[in-house]
Structures are given as C-alpha cells and as structure tokens.
Image 1 (cartoon, helix red, strand yellow):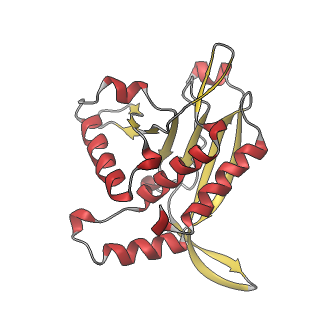
Image 2 (cartoon, rainbow, N blue to C red; image 1 turned 180 degrees about the horizontal axis):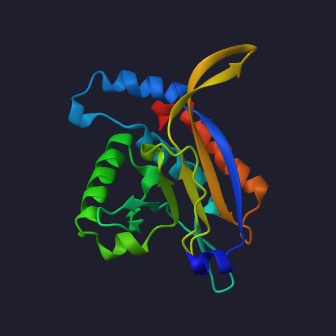
Length: 209
C-alpha cells in the first residue's frame, strides 16, 4: 500500500448509482427461487463493474515497464477480509462473460476458499482490476488504494434508500455510491467518469447483465 501511494498518482471520482430497477428485478427474481439460489446486490454490482471495465479498457490492465498494458480479459479482483485479520483480493476470471448465477457461485466459492487458505496461485496473481465492497459493514463510500501494477480500484458502499428527485417528483429509491480510484498516468477524469456512467447504465437493465 505504501508503494502504491508513493508511485501511483491516484485520482478519485464518485457516482451515486441508481439501483431501484436492479433491486426490484432482483427481488422479483429471488421470490421464484430457493433460498440457496438467490442473488445478492453485490453480484449485480460486480458484473456491472466487470462489463464497464471491458468497455472502458483504460481501467483494466497494468502499468509496467514505463507504460500501460491493457488486459485482454477482465479478471475481477474481489477484496475479501480474512477471519484472523488481513485482506486478500483474488480474481474471478473472465467476470464480464459470466452469467449472474455463475458469478454468484464463483463469488461464494472464492470467499470460502480465501478464508480457509485454499486459494490458487493464479487467483492471487491474475486480477486486472479490483473491487472492494464494504457495504455490508454500513460504509457509505470507499476510497481504495490501487494494487500495483493494476491501474484502478472500484469501491462500493452500502445499498440504501434515499430521497431521489426524478421528473420533478421526489421519491425513495435504492442507491449505492461507487468510487473509482484510478492511475492518472493511464486515464483521466473523462475516462473515469465514462466508467462510472457505464456502470450506472448497465444497472438500469439488470436482466441483461
């Protein structure tokens, strides 16, 4: 982490994601499923982050040998807190291509193996961009520190209900704050904003994720 802050010129952008359609769709979908097969909001957010990283490639890759090397696949690192303290961020390979159900299975398996010390070496070495989600702990926003040689990290806060003005009317909608920490040697605020905008767009059509 110290090396990251010393060598990577971080910049930060945040966007409040409108999750109302996503939560409604997930609730309706889960109502028709057994408990063990139900989705959680974090899976929709992970899939949206993975697809957005594919569509805005400046956040997906490595800064090595003095330049940016874009990754050909999205291997999404997922930060996992260990029971005895510490943090690891193993990869879900090709996360942008997985269905939500498959991504849910991979996430459960990855967290279980991370906490029991059974991760594969490739899972630790392969992440091309990382997501950290502290929403379960009630955190509203997360400003992450990039894992070198990666060039971005996405922080996700808790899903909450907030007043939201839309078409001149105020209502209550489910939202979450997404924060992009990115390497200014590789991308700028315009590209970073496009990434967050793309995440939000994808979450308006959760059935297409």
